[in-house]
Length: 136
Image 1 (cartoon, rainbow, N blue to C red):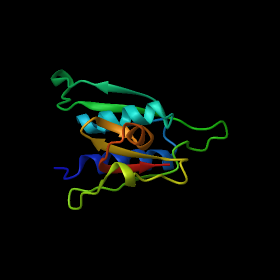
Image 2 (cartoon, rainbow, N blue to C red):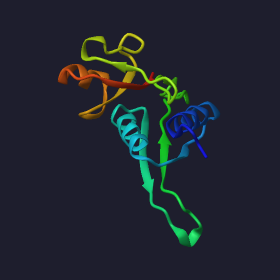
Image 3 (cartoon, rainbow, N blue to C red):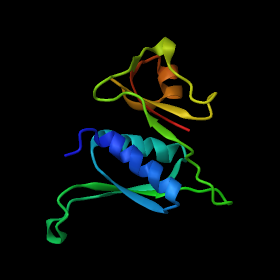
């Protein structure tokens, strides 16, 4: 049993980029799907695909396949990803104290009552929430 599925998914993505893989498969839940959608919109990954469960081939869980993005020289587009709020220590930010990641070259992902969003959108909507992770 995985105690923190989001940290597990972020670690799989980080390790796949370091190993030079073209794709990686992570377990599905709604928060992970929303974060993957944000990564695709911010061009940190090429695309993603949600794979439904299929008992015929003994696939009991939904998964998400991420197709990773690299530069023309072969360097990974995603340099790093870090989980900020953990199950043991939740981190909340209000709309005035939203973080900027590496002088706005990265993104901070915020989970709020308006949904999962990037720090730029949260500033525009003047909403705070749980500081889930940062990506650069």
